Picture 1 (tube, rainbow over the protein chains, first blue to last red):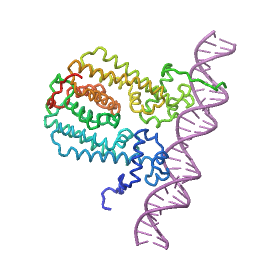
Picture 2 (picture 1 turned 90 degrees about the horizontal axis):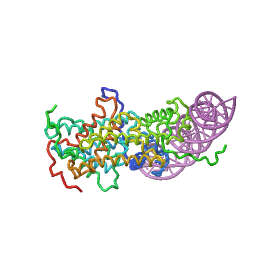
Picture 3 (picture 1 turned 180 degrees about the vertical axis):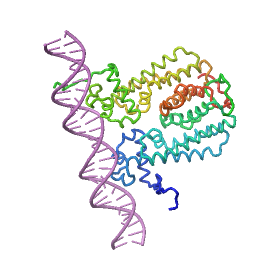
Picture 4 (picture 1 turned 90 degrees about the vertical axis):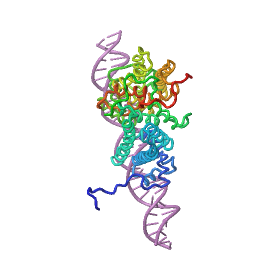
Length: 217
Length: 217
DNA sequence: TCATTTCCCAACCGATTGGTCGGTATTTAC
DNA sequence: GTAAATACCGACCAATCGGTTGGGAAATGA
């Protein structure tokens, strides 16, 4: 093994996908999202798939690995999805909107997994799985941060409180996962677009009381 | 024992406050916020207070009533706190800012209870407790909705997407409870004020591409 | 064909859970 | 003083949990 650090071959989560495995993950995601990690037992998951509890251990080594696989694959796919969606958009405001729209589209496609990702992450204690998820989360946050930063540098975004904008965007994502239900009148994408509009232009008709277009830091 | 038809007294939550009861609620709130409702056992709560598990049943009739009392008293107090804070503020933009600032102040004062309120509400299944909490939540949401509506009527807020603004404000609250930690460099109130600024005036230096000051509905 | 791997499960295990019971100690009320 | 509340607990219970064991059936590959 030619490696500086003796590192055992890291079996990244979800390398071996099978239809059965995906089915288990899908069912479990729905149940975890609705009733929490501790609120769902393995017999329930197994029963919902039509298997016995013991058989789950043929596909996963323990309960937490089921949760971890859901979380990691979801946030990994989200990063890829967003990167692709904003790749060809350069103007900062449009890029911010594209980011939020992509986020909403992904959410609508993988709603259960996404809800698990956002609300059950704290149940993921096993370091290997947790660290892998955190890596992807950092990457995700860097994406939105760089969108804001580039907008400030380009002179089209206010320079005085970029952190608040990042927070606003992250909050919108969290809010969506928390309250959005697919039966409502609006699609997630529509909500995201309106949201981008509010963040970009504000709700007030007046201009801000103090000068806001400012120097870069 | 004359326990054949032991009727439980129907009393509103937190009518009889005692120091011991408050202590239990305080300790339990911290544990629920950190590790979830199912993640904390009654022996742990009892031990942290310095009591036995059996004694908890002298103050509460079951585990869920502990959670329910935390949730209901917190959201009830929040409503009172906010009402008082915005009572003397009339200009819509200032009123929106005051709402968010009061929210942040309350959060800093009752952080654990507030986190329980926002993240463990789904564990509250007992109808009596749940309904009481929902009543207060509706009242809370009506408060922010009316602030936006009044601003639109007064002609100082854009009239085209009031729902998005309400969502933005609610999202900020959830975000705060989710990510804010008291050790950070900023106080919750500072974050709230910046947030209000973003929501009011937006991040873009340009004006919106289409006319936004519109007719009332 | 036959050996191997994949897929599956009934039965079991130790640990822990929310909740109960019967009782004691302490405080309060008259 | 004494009776009634109030405050407290050790020991117990039925249920459920995540996880294990040992092996059966079915597909796979030679």
